[in-house]
Length: 150
Image 1 (cartoon, rainbow, N blue to C red):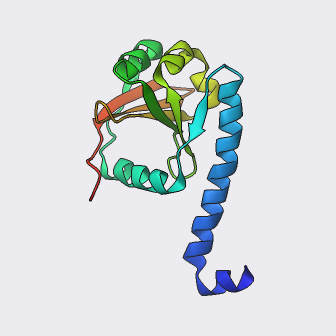
Image 2: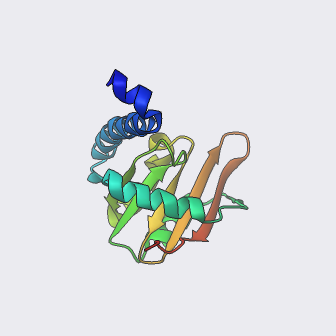
Image 3: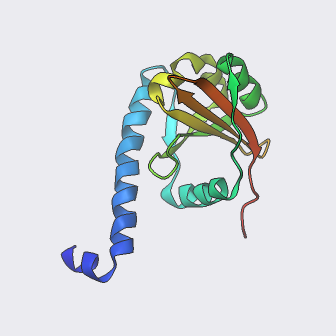
C-alpha cells in the first residue's frame, strides 16, 4: 500500500474517500432501518456518475421554507424509489429508498442528515436540495438534473 501512495496519490485518495463513504453508508442504512425504512447503498461506479451530474447542475439560489414535509412529499410523489445523499456530496454516500417510506418518515430527515440532504428523482429529472441552517432555518431548491454524459 505504501508503494501505491508514492506512485499514485490520487488513486489512494479516491480509495480512502470510497472507504469513508462505504462506512458512512453502513451507518445510514442502520439509521434508516431503525425507522423501518429499507435503504440500499448505490454502487460506487453509479455514485461517481451521479456525483458528476450533480456537480454539473446549478443549485442556487435556495429559498426559505417553513413546510419541508410538503416540499418533500410533493417532490417524491411520482417516484417509487428515490436516491438520497447528505449535503456534502463528496463525502456522503447515495442510498436508494422507497419513496412511500420516505414520505412517511419526513420528520426524521433532519436527524439522519443534520446539515441537509439531496433527493434525486430520475422520474422527474430533478434534484431537491435541502439545507438545514440552525440560525436561518430550512432552505430548499428544485433544480433540473443534467443529462448523463454518454
